Length: 597
Image (cartoon, rainbow, N blue to C red):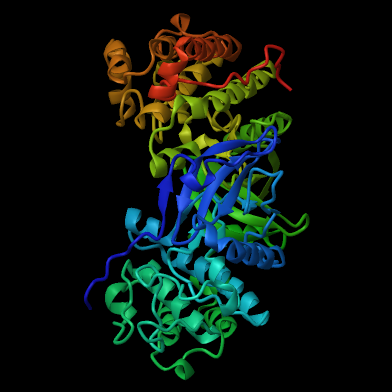
């Protein structure tokens, strides 16, 4: 098979495009920092007056206004968890300096194309998740009498929180509602065998072929040819035979040889491989529970209380799963302690006590812990699902962030730390993976108190020590200044894309921390001097040279932000016009009366 390159159907934009230059947003609204340009649509992040991150969908071509309106109208009447419905449509009229465009949810994540390009083929369980969730979406669409026509690895998005979204809805309209001569670009859209090079005639059977092509790409990292598709077993030997058989039938040349429907395709997977039991959760009488996979053990333990949807990650204390709370009909994150931890009665007792204390921390920048529970030696807790992933995933996918972007986020994180420290709770394991991002792009602290509950020796000295304070790595007493050190490390990481003392073992990191190389490292960042001073104190090796607590650290942070803002305001107006925003230009959003709530 000749390898076809995976091409991205979109490119990122960091400023609103020219066709939005004369728009005037409503009072209290602002432009966000992210945007995406696709074939015929632009998606611009906007912040509403409540601080929520929304997507403004617009058409760069002014002649496509009616097409855009039809898309918004159709989406407003869709009702499926994987379809982003229209919130509001802005029409154009004389008194309104905006429009046409519509608002919907801003989707944080990446396409299957981006994921496979970045990290290689997906795992079999994740491909099964795509099969079931995207398959459910297509089955819903076909039941309404419509076909998609542009199903591809570029129109299926996966969020860091494990949720799937199907996009490309500009094509899911009657042909007479799409401008004459336009069709999806076959560089990004799998072209079905029954279509000629110029014909585009979507049907449920053509959607099924595109859907199977998407699954083939996710499994193998390859784009399947229109004919003579190689056996999946040759490219992905670990793929279960039943899964390969279902996908290969969907890729048949003859539409009549494919599955009768996408719904039948999904049912065939459930019958042939038993997703909930044999693949990921063997029957209890087949394999002892302590020998089963983590997912099988969790399904057994949670029983009828939760539906386990997808894995989210694995850390030093346990694994995290996206799940649906069946009693309350809400999605949550479940963190399951590793078996070697859950068998330690002292650690589990501390964990439960600390989790109860942490659950009492009611603050907008703290991810709430809902509950703790156990079944046998399987111990878990549930918390709010962070749909935007973590700061670690943000930097990994998008690179270092600007000071302007993170200034209000860090202020809120510091306020949350103040509230926790007042309550006598020290985090002890602050790191980019524990700063989570909600659906509105707000940063929030997760796993409060868990590190302490599971033992001081486990915080910083195992897993990644890159954000741990020297006293942690030495096993010495820890307090609020320990959290301050970790937060300064996170700020350094977010602004530069690297941890302040690199990666390595605890011994290697500690040696760097005590080597007095910090001034040179900070100077090399070329950050503003005021910010370097703030980082120098936050990253001081000696506790007495550091900020004593989060309150003192936040006061200093606000002073830095205001100083940089004054420097920007002091530039002549003509210099600001010619040069654009100076490094560190910030909007003063801080209120001196703010206090922990």
